[in-house]
Length: 181
Length: 224
Figure 1 (cartoon, rainbow over the protein chains, first blue to last red):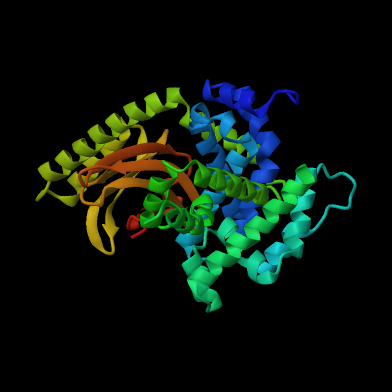
Figure 2: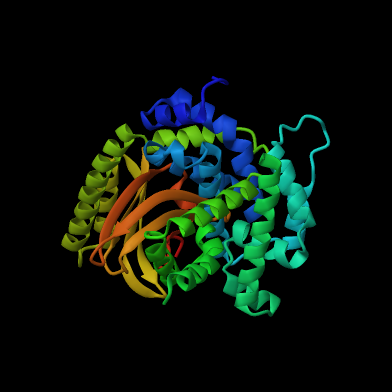
């Protein structure tokens, strides 16, 4: 099954193919659970979120459109939204953004990593971003905080947060673009 | 407002739009502009791609052993043939609940023992052992009822009678604090009905919770 594309597996899942569903789950479970655990931090809750993600993916498999992005990013956005719903519902405090930036920018030195060049470039770019830009970017991306919520936490105007996020994202894009070129 | 100024305003919003955290009003304003502005749409696509790439940076973690089997069991539970069975189950639940309600009304004023016998008789007919009913409430105000049935299979049936319209995600919270997502219940015109099988003992359920985007939380305490 290793050579079968995600798109084919999703199409087969939509048609009720259990083997395809099993292959899809096993291929993506570490990534989905990793993201869920990063956001919600409680293993049991992360497991619930990850399970919920695959049920949702299966339900919407028929509507997945490969032209709009890779299956893995589609799946991770479902995971992110489910995890954010869970922490918002529980009123949990999100992880310290500096800690998260540190976690995201650690390079796998084991030699077994299949980290893409784009990921390496992005890790480096994020690590080099000033704290006041990196922190709100990860707070919005991973924890779904709005500019206003971040502004209240950091005691700065919401407009300042928006500008920092926008400039920070531009810098990240430029770095990714340079590497891609 | 000149076009460039509108673009500038919407571009301020684009990161929040790409991350799905913009307010409803801002989202509506942004999307109205994006529909007619190719340049801002390209900007949104670029920012969205960066956000997607950021999510891929999270370290992978293997879930606990048996996770894949649990997911496959959950998918199987939601498979179309089961949906059909769930439909039948909801019908069966409604009949059982109606029978019980009729039985209890009929026996009102009779000896408690007779009521209990009738209850047991209905459960026996339905091959079940336990039925709980609880009020669905929003901030303490009645919003409907939940019936939880211990049998083969066990099931949960909810009847919403007065709640804001929308799609609610339904979950069980166990007495051990663990949560289990069951599915969604849609409320239209203030009412809705939904049911599903559950694979945990009803006695281990502390409460049923329903919540959705910009909707109040609806709770039924089954332990009360």
